[in-house]
Image 1 (cartoon, rainbow, N blue to C red):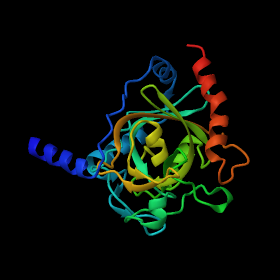
Image 2 (cartoon, helix red, strand yellow; image 1 turned 30 degrees about the vertical axis):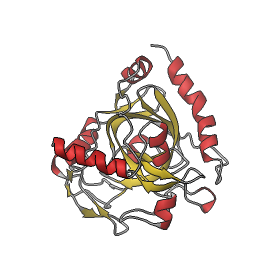
Image 3 (cartoon, one colour; image 1 turned 90 degrees about the vertical axis):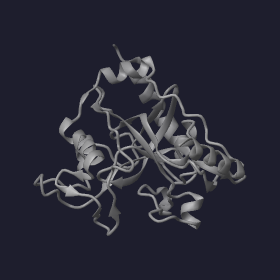
Image 4 (cartoon, one colour; image 1 turned 135 degrees about the vertical axis):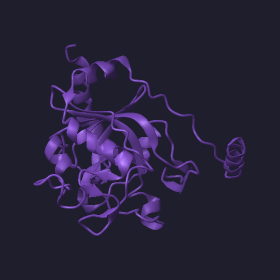
Length: 272
């Protein structure tokens, strides 16, 4: 194992890059107080993500499985969700703690040199243009899947998360990691069995850089050799019905931050 670590460091040095220090993940007192006021959204539903982590199964659906648009939804054991909390706060916000995978859709690489599974499109497209993973901090919500779960009649796996939480594309919130608080927008939809994913720009803002080389315009020209999920500790808080009006290419990050500020400040000021 030590030899493998030494070889990895040699490879990184040859690339002129080194992995960033792991960001701190301990809950701040303010965040711990906010989460303590929440109630479980649905522990049975949260347990399905843990089931997928253990068994590559979500309810009655075995993974991998084809989605509604023909894409393959992989299992979770190779990149566990680690959903420790899934809460509804008194003000109606939804909070969850999980891993944080990396979404590169809409970025330079996905639009010019896509890897298998990468897309230039994003589910939220202001002005009919995809969001840019390189410059806009966003999160992904479960959005795509088979129409039905054979073990749970009446459940549409593509819409289940949105129905349970009230969240939609364009809603805003924050991702908190240690002392860092980053305003985010719900910018993309992912597999029904995965919770916890954010854009390259979000990872950068959290101190978890996933790009090995940036262009002069700040877009990712090469993924880092250590590219991969933040394994846990990221807390996402999203506000249903909070989508800012007037979204257009070029103003998404600014409008998100403006919309989030009073909502986040209200949570901080809420009585204990």
